Length: 180
Image 1: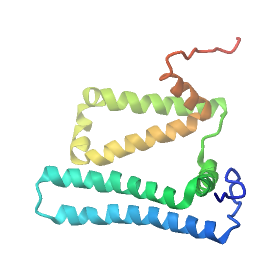
Image 2 (image 1 turned 180 degrees about the vertical axis):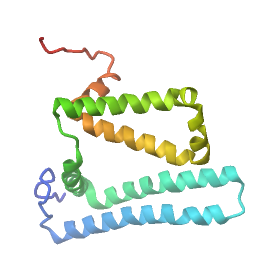
Image 3 (image 1 turned 90 degrees about the horizontal axis):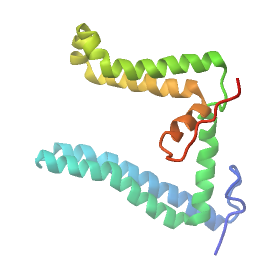
């Protein structure tokens, strides 16, 4: 069995030429899966199939094809190659992770934005019915802007808030308050 030098360290290139070829071929197979999945969706939409069948096929093309080709790519790359690719991608995406601790002002701004988006999206149509025309004319724009503001608020709140949010879904989680 061949292994890479250090799959945990991003930036360590595979030393064996066969490993490098397997890595490149695996990435190519994964990309081809995405291209086929996304590329065949317009073909399905242009067909004369029923709407239900079109929806099912598009779901399979969008979700199933990339997953199937990812499994094939992992089989080609092997476990060390996939671990190397994950560490490489994770190393590049790590810089976009929210900061662990943020300033009190940034936390307050993020919290206000977080609560405002949730409250306005749920009671907004009842409180301000005149804004309904905007919701009716551009529903996708209103929904996407609300989602974008929610994501921005989560990044403003920082990594500690992500842990607090995660603890909502852990049954045995306990709140620990700092001494006052």
